[in-house]
Amino acid sequence: MKLDFKTDAGIGIRATLGTIVLSTDETLEPEFARMTALDGVALYHSRIPMVAEIKADTLQQMERDLPASAQLLPKSLDFDVIGYGCTSAATVIGQEGVARAINSVFPHAKVTDPLTALIAAANALGAKRLGFITPYIPDVSMRMRLKLEEAGFEIAAFGSFEETDDRVVARISPTSIATAIDRVAAQTGCDAIVVACTNLRCLGVIEAAEHRTATSVISSNQALAWHMLRLAGVTDQKNGLGQLFKRDL
Image (cartoon, rainbow, N blue to C red; front, top):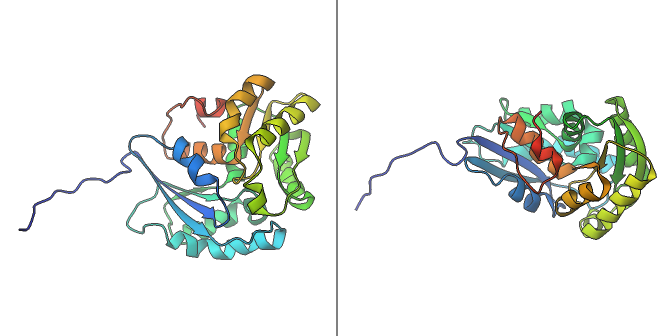
């Protein structure tokens, strides 16, 4: 028996989002699932090779790998936004390099990355003086710091876990991250605290940290999901995700 059927517009009737996630990342997808859980929003993931050790040369390699990873997203979909989920590599490759690589496969999609999103988020919150936390070795942290300063921000306080192994970064406890936020917030007055790295488990500590420190907290995953939704025209405010998710671009 042949059955009749009708077709419709599919899942992403409000927005279709894609992310390219590091092969070593254990955190982005679970956190994104929570932040993008909205009716009519469809989220798809691809993976990109990444060695465990985070260094400038291993990060640069991903620019060459990005088109192949983008090819693994469903070609039948008209993506509104595609996000590249690596803060440190986005710093090394640059926003233009990331966009060029992804648009070579999906020319009509808007493209963002965590560093671009962190800058947009800080601007949306009206922050100029930033507390800055990373898990990275000094060279990678310094590159990111310089990018933030070039974007017009002052780094009022800084701290790093100085861990090169991405597998270890994924195991840094949320309690340790919360403590780091408190320590950086206590150093000097800042308008917002930026916690950089998609593999740090930040989402569960942001709201409480904002209440304790009376300062907005921005994480890589939070900023990237927020920026992708806003670029796609989805302006829903969500509770429990920090002050950022109550702001538009």
